[in-house]
Image (cartoon, rainbow, N blue to C red; front, side, top):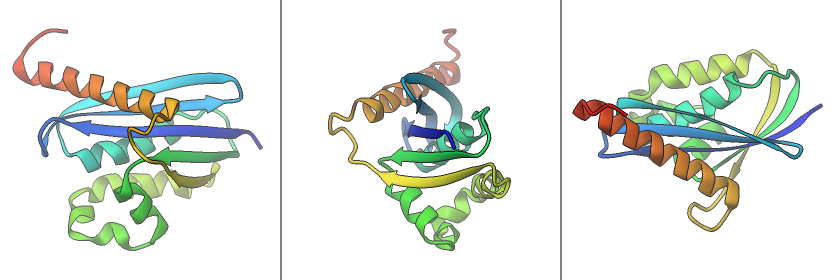
Length: 147
């Protein structure tokens, strides 16, 4: 099985507000990134969307995937089956359902690793910078400024 490490992060300007997400994948010696933004989001929805988009973006099948995140929300909700049913989780119900759908395909074995944010971890810091950059794009889009 191919081993893949994915570092995810989400960012939001205001909560809710313009937001961005990013996923940086490390497969062997190769690094690849995916990122995007939404003009209306929450920080937690961007964290979750980063996970969904990262898993949806994998082309290889049957991989051992380790998702590294500094989000307690993601780690708690994925570690406890019903944790996403909390008030905040219900706010992201559609994203959680999409996440469960992605996992239900059984294409990958997924493990979550909690990392400390802003601690000098190169890959986590890269995901953070990309998510913030996407958040900035969403702010510009919301303001009607072409980028």
